[in-house]
Length: 252
Image (cartoon, rainbow, N blue to C red; front, side, top):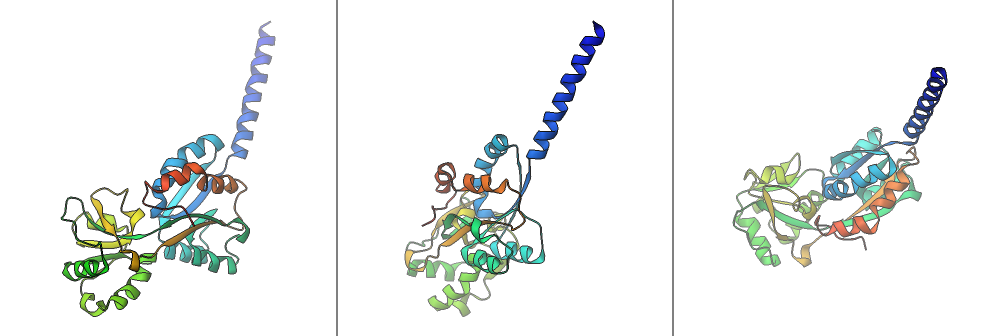
């Protein structure tokens, strides 16, 4: 009798171990490289995705230029989210799977200020120009879409020389530095301002000088099969509804 119960217990334990091994084999660790602008989206959809699929997301944050450089150096990843132009370039290099591309969102550029500071006027191009000339220091994130646009913008406004001593390149998220008051303001992605503590959005760039950055996701040619489920989650109606809260807009 005891031997019979013992055999049943051993059989049940063996079954549990088999199912656990099957689950472990099916689960995957998905390495994602993403701009900080999409952090809120991942914070919202990530836990549900992990729970429903059994897969684990490992997200590294950076700017599109830095992500592209890491991919070109051979950094392992499963999904990368970058600007559309960088995605096209990496597809040509066979470092991204061209058949897997999925437009995720677009982001405009805004002015970040320390929370509680007096909001400068950026409602028109002339007002925006005066705000830049009056600012004590102006930050911008190195290797970002907004920094690549900045020099062209200042040249277009005719104030590049007047601001050269005020411009301050930042090695990390602009919000981290602006929250301390140094620099006084920063030109960066709106989506990198909205969810950050200690800073607030003074306003978007005026329409006639605004630049929208299109973010596109694509898989590595050697990515795990599970990445298709994540790409679907990133383009789902749930993800789309989070974009506005994150300071982003749906892709056009």
